[in-house]
Amino acid sequence: MRREIGAIVGVLALAVFMSSLDLFIVNLAFPYIGREYPGTTLSSLSWVLNAYTIVFAAVLVPAGRWADRVGRRRVFIAGLAAFSLGSLLCGVAPSAITLIGARVIQAGGAGMMVPASLSLLLASVPPRARPAAIGTWSAFGAMGAAFGPVIGGSLVQLSWRWVFFINIPIGLAAIALATRVIPESRDTRAGPRPDLIGAALLACGVGLIALGLVKAPAWGWGSPAFLGTMAAGLACGSVVVLRSRAHHSPVIELGLLRSRTFSGAFVASILFYAAFGALILNFVEFLTGVWHYSAIEAGLAIAPGPLMVLPFARLVAPLAARIGGPGRVAVLGSFVLAGAQLLWLARIQADPGYLTHLLPSQLLGGAGVGLAIPALLGAGSAGLPPARFGTGSGILNMARQIGTVLGVAGVVAILSHHLAAASVPTFRHSVTLTIALFAAAGVAAAGLLAGRAGIPAALPAEPTDRSTSGAPSDPPARVGGAP
Image (tube, rainbow, N blue to C red):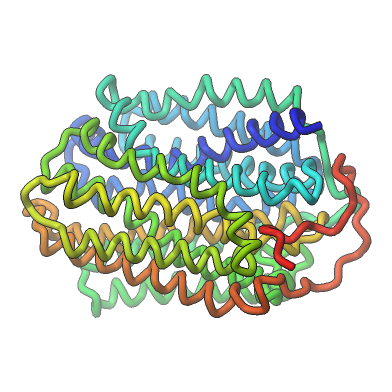
């Protein structure tokens, strides 16, 4: 039984590693893509990342609901296939526009497989084993995001196109393994179709806000173009909320957000991943622009941080049991990361000084990532009933992608006018942004997740689940063994 669970978690963790990897693997390919497609700027290239992240965010919740309805393994395998196809199209893209279009296909596949992956994990693993399984799954996602620049820096030495080609054999292997080792599960109650219009409006809203932030330095922060774009983005978001209140299968299930722990994990995840996305892009641009590292040197310089993630992720469950729940671990991890960035801000300089100036911050930051990400996911998913595994995991992962888009857009807005000079004062501003966002995530987690010893607030009443899961029908275990 333990071996079967290990195989299931391994396949599902491989998929989330791939999807997270592709959020950031392109960062170090930007200069190489720009040389092949002359005339592209950092703000233009950022849409190779943002298009992926925005579509990813928009697809997650409808795909999670669809997976609950038609079969989680079926949607998971379909997502792997679409992701692999999108990777192939990215690798052969003849222009920047076609590359962005291929990234949309790739993101659609990732948006299908990630919520199906987490819901399959929750459905296939017995409640007592879920805390460790969730920790492993989320740690691999964090490692994928953090290792993106490392792997990207190595692959671009061959060609930037290998950044995408590498996904194809991994995706095909994951499809073969998923077919063999993962049991199918679904919610047998015939639910309504997801709100696709709401999903499209969500994508438009996030995209417009990201566009406004990226273009603000050129347009002017008080210009009609900036204010109009931001207003349109907020209007789209407002319509999504209104539709979610009235639609029978909304893109954001507001009933779940009435749970203090679930909504707390949602808000804290947006802030945390905004900081995390800003941090990764900021390191890449600083190392290549100020210290003039090559792509592979920059990737290797970032590597020690990700190596700290998995060992500290394994400490989340026992630490949560000791200090009162995963919410308090999330607070700790967020403030450790804020401290790591504060250390970097105090020591940042124009002359390369990796061992004495950057490495301590990298190691401390990797420890914070290993603590915070599994704890946020564990706190948010602890009270999900089985029938809402796909929907709930889709909402939590959507928060991650929205945060990433906003964090990347914020860094691009800060750097875009000053990147040619690559000055330390400019990067001080972007580091300050990451400190503020990590601290805000910690405050949100402290206020919404760390109370009552981390015990999840009750979710809205749910009809009796008749899921065809192979897992026992016990109530979901409290992650971290909270009393």
